[in-house]
Length: 175
Length: 434
Image (cartoon, rainbow over all chains, first blue to last red; front, side, top):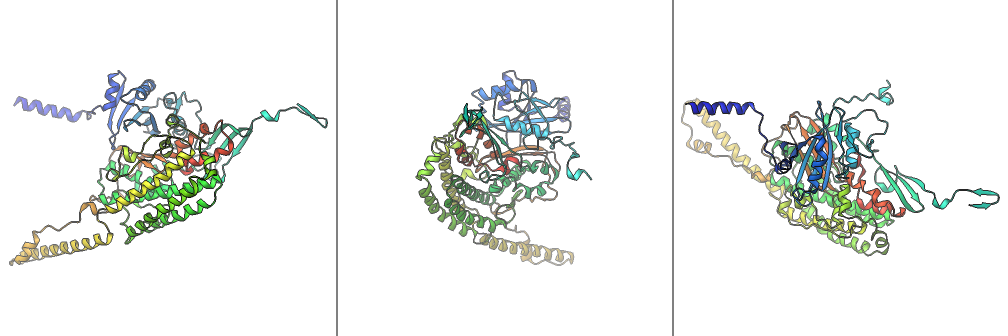
């Protein structure tokens, strides 16, 4: 009888807790090396996602590029995501040797700043400029961070959820 | 310093740099691209691409429209190989929603995508040689591209903006006689490709302008994120169709053409070989197309429908008899217990779980789907928050990364090589600017 009660209470406790996310291959590898990593599970395509703190991003990135078990040598894309409360910089990586993909998420701080990945993957150059242009995330350490897709004198960052296009210079805003 | 007729020329013309603005409207850029180039004589000293002239805010549009409303806009992201854009978008949503795609749909998608690759490469072939100064290959290439566009017109009603794939299936089945048309075209194309190769491959002008020009290696490609034929021309057999098979590419047999030279000529050869490989894939996909001719499927479906109707009517008669408290006919009772036959699920053009386009809501989640487009990695990063509109849609176009390598290829080289090098990268500007 008591055993049954215990198991019931355990089940109830399980329901209260958020679902436990199993660490993936690369997340586990990073954790072994004492990097602070938050596991986010797999995306729908089966690609592992991890969240890394801004201060340890460059060291994690260097490890992921140089370690023989990872070898993420190709940077696929950088995308900015507006989660309303905060903004994310999402980096997708691909490895030519193991054909695996990995997704790293970095949360921008209150100054909208994230360290630039230029020293690790120079391919991020235009991608970071685009994310700055459209989402307003500032990549610290990027040598040439300016607008790329929008006109250079554009006001605001269009992909933000709170973006209101009220530039008085535009014809349709004069009326 | 020299003195001519009393005027002292103080500046030394030889050592002065000149800034030349190429574009934004330039016939060889196939779009709107501006290159601010610093020249020292004929040598390029610095180059800065200015993009964004074609920015149409495709990503913002995706957040303001439902998934179905957004579909016709995808064609415009990259209009030369629009089937790939649609495939990437539909796959992302199908994976998120956990829909299973019938084999017939996958095969038709594969056939159209590979034909699209050929038509895209043909356009590249024509315009690339036009940039080099040869006019006639342009007309040959467009003549053959026209035949493929006719096939697409038959299947989707449009020549460039297809909007043919749907989430979970296809807009419509292939029309009658389409398979025969495709076979006729793909049997004719190898002869044409051989003609092109005979004209171009050993042409002394082409060889002079292409061999040893714009050389890059694998490290350069990785440094700038270059993928696709440009990467394969450096000797890396990287093809997502082989390494991370999607659709039904693991069921067909094909090779990944590579070259080790990494110059303009190598990229030309890789693309020509890819067209042959695409033809091989189309041949195999047509032979193994589940269901075969659409007329046969319709006939079978009509037979099955007739049986199902009979069973339904028998059921009705039994119910009426029970209500009237009379004995139902034994034949009807027997018929009622039969299961109505169903069409093979691999032969359908829509998955079994029908998608309501108006109220389609994928579950909360995210997904990055990647395919090998004619230009390289094409990706769609899609985040859904469970509403009928996406939280974020990000397009990863291959041209965007491929264009960023251009300055480093040109600096220190001759200005007249610019169009050969730029053409060999096969950049399409609408995909860069989105």
